[in-house]
Length: 193
Image (cartoon, rainbow, N blue to C red; front, side, top):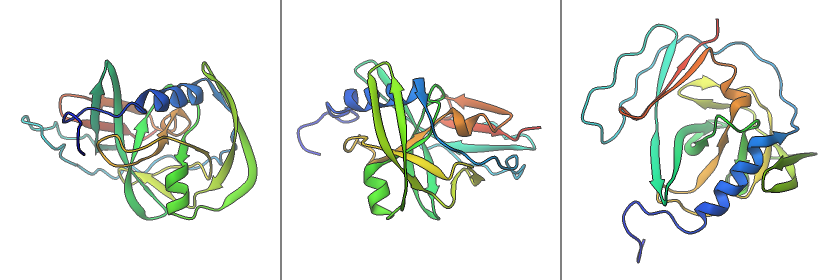
């Protein structure tokens, strides 16, 4: 991209962070309960790390992350597959009560609207957004449970391609533990139980 410093995010990052803050406070969305994540262990190496990532334990899965920092703001991106396609970069937000999908990705994958809406409320205000149906989505090979996801506008390219959505606590809470290893650029998920 012309005219930008390497690693710098566009000005729209503040708008995206405001939207993410909105989803963090409250979102009324239906989710279907499901079984605990499988205990199948996989291992991925983070790009650009000099030290070797620690081995995962039985019942854990290691997922590579991208950490983007600019203007004092940090975003963690995780690869998520949606309906068998991708992976797409999703923002990891442990404070968000609901996961979401970007308007761009919903259009690209032709995700069908459910006919229902979600009311998002947060520190930046509130909005009513449509819900779309996702048949299957995974992070690190672990199946995620939400089937109806709110659609939000996440802005443009952040130096890593389009952001596909947000992975929030509604999905992360289903794991027994969620650990961010910034040194090795890994997200470690431990199966519940």
